[in-house]
Length: 437
Image (tube, rainbow, N blue to C red; front, side):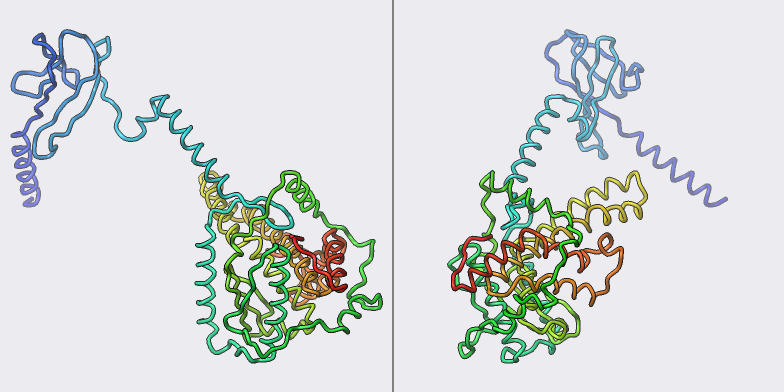
């Protein structure tokens, strides 16, 4: 029982210490007519205890209690007395601000104004499709992220990066040069593209092989045969977006492309892939070059990846993921997280990713045509990519990329193919078309 006695002695000592302090309540007087009122518990305050003084010249109003003692530091608590002489303490915390309709109205108006300003200030129009998208990420931050990721990639593939004089590096660099020069013509840009790593004055300018051109234009080439009875996929959103943008006179956003230092690297790795990071950093893997041997095939893929950079898909993806995360956090309060994650992927993230791929296909098709490569080759390239990566019936619904077969069908019969062929014929005739994006 020793612990019980010690605890009791400690509690009695604390009560004795606390009883030495009292609440000294004060309020300013506007006249000499005052009287005592009940305390916060509704009981009369005897002399020598905590008292609340009020002005007896009016029956109710806002008053305050000032607490004194080592534990309060002069804190004040406001209250008011209604006409029935009932004491009400004013609520504490930010939630009390929303009890005032005027404050609520001001907050709503100011908040709405800020949201509208941020939204309208970050709307951009994508070249060619004229689709308007909302991007929170600034151009400088996007460029820095791309450069940082490029440096990290070079560190991770250290020892696998082919030297600048390697034949595959020279070949890829020349094809990429054609694509970037086509981009400059399409956007009416005067800036000359330079490659800091792979540029070499000793290398002759690239010319498209005449055999490749004849094979691509020939009806006997199986890659150029496409039946009119094939399924025509829905790309009506592209034409609607272009028509709407032309009616509004929307100007394509190209500021993120200005001043870029384009770089090309070839990585000796069997993976079948290529990408273009924000900031103009193009990376091609040798696994891709082993499956696609012609220049037109490589130009198709590089044009597609550059199309992602032109449309700022990386920055848009970061913005979309932010909104998706907010929506998921809200839904987590009502639905199981696993269900929310699955629904978010199926109905938000994956459809958005597939639409971006389609948009990059269209832009890349125009770029390769302007660079002098036959756009008829592009559908067969995407179909071949699908076979290499493995096609499935659910790929159009459970993948970030559309199936290769459907991408091929869409490009072969879409209106953009007619536009690309028109550009290609002009280039072959020695003429160049500018401003096609």
